[in-house]
Length: 154
Image (cartoon, rainbow, N blue to C red; front, top):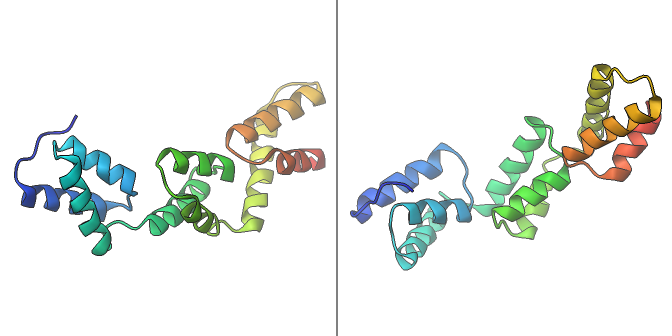
């Protein structure tokens, strides 16, 4: 765990810095505050203050998370939604976050991933090749109907 902090002012400064570096969700902030050794009640009070002062914003976090995981890691919507649910981000915020992903870019990403995987495979059997490509893209969190549609076009 993290170091124990006994001064509330120091705890607030540290958590504000933690939130300022990068967008955080409420679950991450509460986990961090508890790692400081603060009580649940005090942690919740600090969280409310952080929300009021715009250090923490679930919708902003979800939008940044969705955009980043898609653009940088090429994750699909299913994987992004699953990871956000583990962070206890409300479904309404997840839906808003998903709006950050352009539909055409999303379909293009599936095609790019399929071509990339296809180029790496040495299998002679086209069915084995297709299965490996589909499995790879599904593990990235894309919807199976979109993946199969794309792979059939290859």
